Image (cartoon, rainbow, N blue to C red):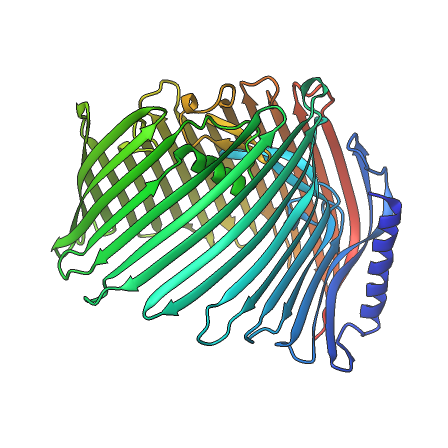
Length: 613
């Protein structure tokens, strides 16, 4: 961080300290302007050592955060809030930062409650910790500088269509600790929306334009990569009540155009048109729902979703011609007081890469809620029969069981679901998934409680060997009025694609992806934390975490991991807060060609909280 910037921050905080100490924090009024300020300022001594760029050996300075809010003339005319902060890594643990983060967040409301309300939000962060994503586990640490702006204005005139216009812009830089890799990215979003009710027809329309730019440097052999993505989305919906009980019908139209250009992966673009209709018939005994959907670019819709989420794929997906039409009718009926029987029939016709595929499915499911001796147990099960042009396929099974029960001082919550032969986006591929979770809570003597939580998810594409992905997590916690201890373990593996924000689980089998786009990942993370409150107004907390991950692609993050130790002790005496903190962090990436990043930081400080009225 530049010393000039540091000096301006310290000077600003010092002035706020003097203003608060002098009592000016209560409220300032200048004509029709009213301002209230409060905050916490800290004098501290600390030190850093390690090889993380920008760290100091030791320093004596300020840290703190504040809230400045107010209004002009009337809160409904103009109101504002500003939240600045500056502090050492131990001081901003609520920001999940291992570095000395600083920044601000501001909000401005204009003409609130009127026919022309406006909203502006802006934010800036420096030296903030972030994460390079790995599906299912804690990712690798990054150091980020980010900024954002969001502006929304509306025209809400009586008996006229509403109009809402918005513009959002985000950007920043991110460096992956333990490597030379760094990323500069930005997104720009312009959107327009309108709602109108005419003759009982509820109409909505909108337009969204998005640009995403990503520049990556420090790849293997000194390579750099640039990815540019953009999309335009047009949407229109109409919904109307049917004059029979609470029945309704709706129609939706959308067109999405997208393009992404990657210097290493090439250019990809496309247009996706979608039409969907829905009819709900509220028959007294067995309500019926009929839905139809037509899409003229299946794989294009996947890539467009990634672009719209800011996750520009760093290599385009294969995009052969593909389209789909689906129609489905479903209903359910209560046959007994606690038994619900449902059924559906659907037909999907798809054209993909020069071939036609069609599947007809019919299914029935039953759910039952036990009332007496097994109160809290609910069962849901169903069978699915599928048929294609090649003939009938095997019968699939869908089922789940949930159980919620108090057994004395025990509380049990459990859920298990299994889907066999569930359609994916492409009807020639089906998946089997298993998902279960459970929570056990136990009241113990002396005001103690124990909690354990387990989750498992497993998914596999039936037609492709080696396509399975899975993730498990286990958490336990023991809580007492004066202490708590917890532990967590997670692991995950599967197939992913690389985007600007990290790895994203693949939505389709690897054979559908472009050559070299399918990336196998495997990762796990575990950690523990301990907190104790030995006397009133005193707290001591410690935490340890470790994350490991690897991929099959040598140009990516092979055999990577980080370890983090954290400690903080505080004692509050009247308006003074004494605290001491400690952080030790290291992260390594085996194929980066750079040494592991190491940082050890400590601080001792005293702060005071000032609050206006």
